[in-house]
Structure formats: structure tokens, C-alpha cells
Length: 126
Image (cartoon, rainbow, N blue to C red):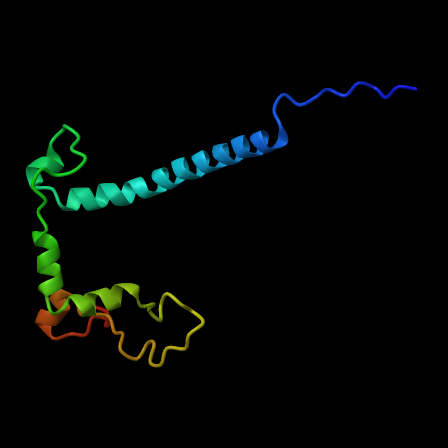
């Protein structure tokens, strides 16, 4: 008895696997470009002049890069303080942490009319 005739693959297994790997790598490369494009655009725009950045014509890379803003930020002595404040979590943003004196320093500021008349902002006018 003869076995049923199975259809032979059009391409050998190694060629099909290489082709599918190529498609996967191509999709990964396209996805990486899609994800990295905003970073590229942000950096290239930060190096442009105001005229280049605000012009209606798209400029992919500035003709004369202007790194003055980076130089100014990195030479500022307060930059490290500002950077550490932007990356450190605050007690209000993380409710699991215990914050000593949570309400001890908070008081409503007096309104301008109460401050000028010498009254407390929480007292009533009656």
C-alpha cells in the first residue's frame, strides 16, 4: 500500500527559517527606529537655532549645531540639585513612606485683606 502523497515544501527548512528570522529582525529594526525617533528629534531640535526650530520646513539636523544651552546647564552649579530633585521620589508621591510632621508645617496663608487688617485668615468676619 502506498502512502498518501504529501505536499513538498516550496523552500527548504533552513531557507524558510532564515527568511522568517529576517522578517522578525526587520520588524524589530523598524520598531526600534519608531521608538528612537522622538529622542533623535528632541536632541536635534535642542541643537537648532530658534529660526530652524520654528520654521515650517523640516530640518532633520541643524546646519550649525548650537550646544550653548547644554554648556549653560552643565556649568550651572545648581544643576545637580535640580536634577536630584527631579529624580528623587517625594513623600507625597509614595504613600507607603512615613513622613514625619506631615501637617506640622502646613498652615493656610492669610488672604491679603486679612493680612492687612491683622486678622487671621481662618477667623470669620461676623
